Image (cartoon, rainbow, N blue to C red; front, top):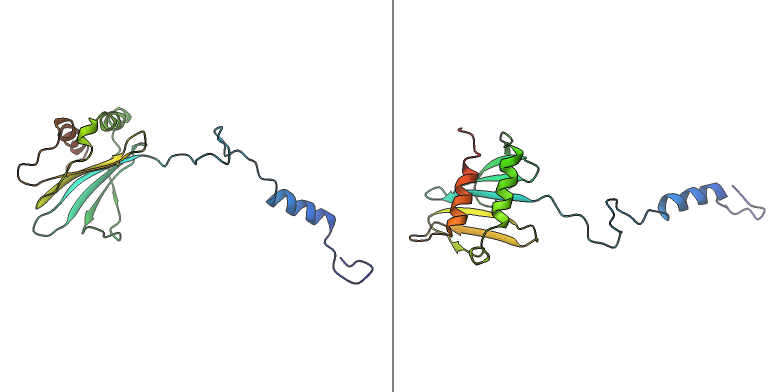
Length: 160
């Protein structure tokens, strides 16, 4: 639209619509958090598996808190291998795995003794602490609770 001097003048409704669409966004992200607060936590996962040996290949399993369960095989760092969906465990077993992970003794959360064939268990505690446990070196034995959780997680894997 041109004003009397020949220059372009934006229509008032266009300005109002632009203002409403870009400048007036809600200050809440839902769920009662304000825009300045930290974003909601990323869904928790537990990752476990083993790797190494002659080939160096790693087999890992990822269990999400919502029950989504996948496996992946490949070389360490290979991001091209697509995860394979596995049958969803019961909600009870998923919840029990995360409760057991959160209950691991604090002095067992820094176990790092890889070997030729290395087993691993990793995730984040409910407080957000990153945990990565590895074992496989001769004589390396993580805490009983770690071994018990690892063994329980491996029972979730359907025979393949």
